[in-house]
Image (cartoon, rainbow, N blue to C red):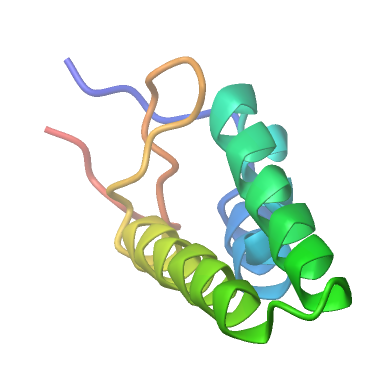
Length: 96
């Protein structure tokens, strides 16, 4: 049976849309491993950029950005689960 998450949909979507490449939304939703991976990718991209490896930095940033876009779309459609396995539902969403 599908159950709704206790986490706020609007907060999750906003965090994903604004701070998505840093993984803040994953920490909010209790998905800590994914949050650490996203944050690590952002730090790696910054490190590569600082050290003059611009193409590699862009590649890592693009990968992280694509991942963030996918997660944001899943959140917007009510198809994403929090760390407890419950769906982050948009207002009025019916779970079957």
